[in-house]
Image (cartoon, rainbow, N blue to C red; front, side, top):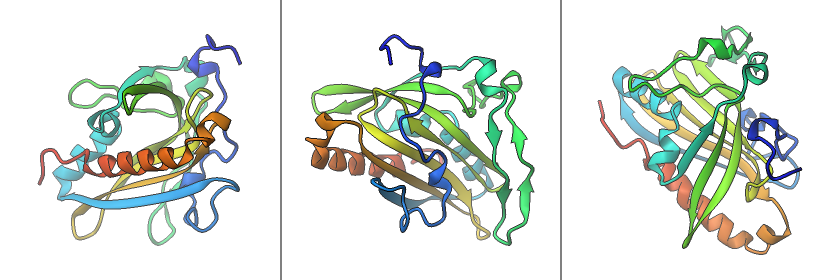
Length: 219
């Protein structure tokens, strides 16, 4: 693929799109990929949940973790027919119907930031020692349930890893608010395989940062 190909024209660099939704991801990850899941309590109450949900859906977890995020909005032709899966509550009852995204109905956070929608693409600038590594990604699905919100992105060619990562905020019946990070990944090519131990350390470092990224206004 040509280096000057627009991000929205690039196919994701892995096959198991959406696998971060699998309940048994840690036991049965896509073959050849390493899965992770981390979860942390980030506050309590409805206001806290709404604040954290908006933060997740406006790239604040990544930005607050030290990434530079350059969002490249995809043409409507890419996002208009994006499938959003059916969501279920703890009893197995559907809480929203399967729907089709509509880029013409863009919504925004309180500060005017556009909320993430499936099909969005971005170039992440990730600090890696003395360097900044460019990591292009595409949002592959969004979760928008009454008490659970978030999204996952998949890697695009040029990212140091192949795989998918998701960030989800949920509120329990006791009012507590939690953030979960789920991912599966592997080095993208032979050069990155050579520094795989370093990649794992960096991934764990940033995962811890993700879980602290929403340590803003509370309750």
